[in-house]
Image (tube, rainbow over all chains, first blue to last red; front, top):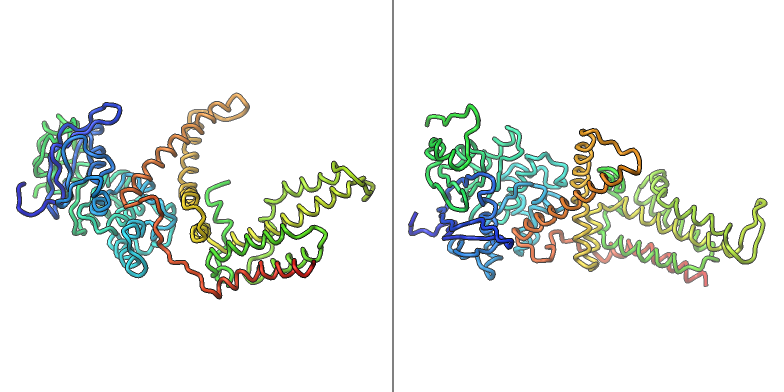
Length: 249
Length: 251
């Protein structure tokens, strides 16, 4: 992994215990190069969400470090970090809190100081990229679930992030919406970390995968190889869906 | 109250009144209400002028009259209360249609009825011509405490989400054979309400995280530039200004 270019994401020996004493992460090491699309796989309770919360400083490391494009996540860098790490939450209703789609997408860039015509341009560009420009002036609760998720991606794209972090992007989507989102994600020219246990989706979108299990990175390699290793998967409570076979290249 | 309740309040349109910036309309309605309340109740013709002014706004905004009348139902509890005052009031009494009524009570009833009706109609017109979210933006513009505006904004956004959640919980209860029939079922409903509160509270935490993730620092960013021109202020404030002049003339 040691390239001379600065990685989009660099996590070193990250450990974290919740205030009640439950240890969730036991020393996580990972790095993601610029432009990579990486899946973070793991069973429920493996610490995936806890790890994600560290990436933009919502939780601060108990031990170890996180840095984004060379900038360490610290109290004094939070503002910059949050602009660089685009977090897409699992429930779009949590993410879309403004009265209209347009206002919601504008929220991040406006916090960063954009105003007027420049703000409009950024907002429309982000909505265009997820194919939701036509819905700009509608309230979020009038959209379908799949559309809301796409808008949630746009809210984050509008901030021109260094890395897009998606928490279970395929959850609750019908097959068509799932495919549409995959097409959008593939079309984006941005580093992606996708947290999921939808293994076929990981295979479809990400060349490389990490398995987080028991609070450490248990495996790191090409998605195709990891998913072909049924023993490895079983060890970490991961399973391919019934009838799914890894397609030949 | 059902989903989409708020959409009944707003009547989309493109009149002079609709186009005025929300902060102008808010201030105009507030000032108008102040003038109305400050008018002594004996000045009948001042109240008639106020009513005519509102009728003028109704015409300018092209709000159908039946719509205004229908929304006025909200005033009914106050009207009932006003009718009781003369009956139970003390002091000098007079007889109307064989009923012995208190004179100060009649005055008090008229006072409540006239002022409340004018205030309610003005508010209905504001709501009918201004989208709820822009009313809030206007309030923000008028320097209403930011926290209050934000709370109201979230209520607007999450009302449907929470009502939906409530509906799902009811379906879940009924799917397992529960039907609320009498008082003994209150604890079940109360527990559901408690669960709904906890869920909404947790959602609030997640929304807060989402806001922090996009650079929220306690202040809502200003997304829409809603400055009003002097002319727009002039148009909006004409209503309370004429009302105030009427009030002055009746001295």
